[in-house]
Length: 118
Image (cartoon, rainbow, N blue to C red; front, side):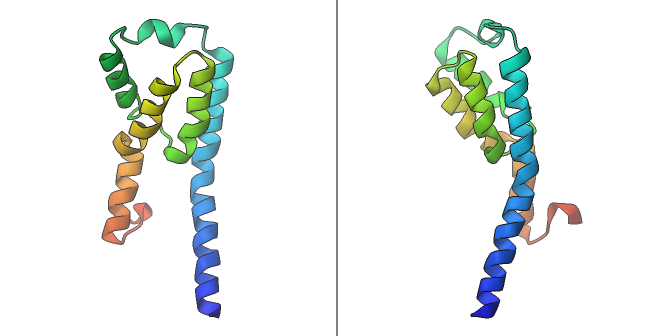
């Protein structure tokens, strides 16, 4: 029982420590979007076609250096700047799938190695 509890605590702490930098980065990006992005800047640059707009938002997730834990504050900032909830959810769901950082971490966890080992 003590080993199980110790493993649980170790895994819980490691998840928190691993995710905190991404959460902070997502918060910083959200602050940048809400503070310095001019009103309508993003909306003017996205395609008018709803399907093309969602494809572009999905691919935008590849450029964002945050995982799913950091995307939530960023998406909240994008909603504040005028994206619809549907468009924001597209980015929120697609970014973790298409993001290279997340993909490398997933492949490393499947192989049993940590990303630091490579």
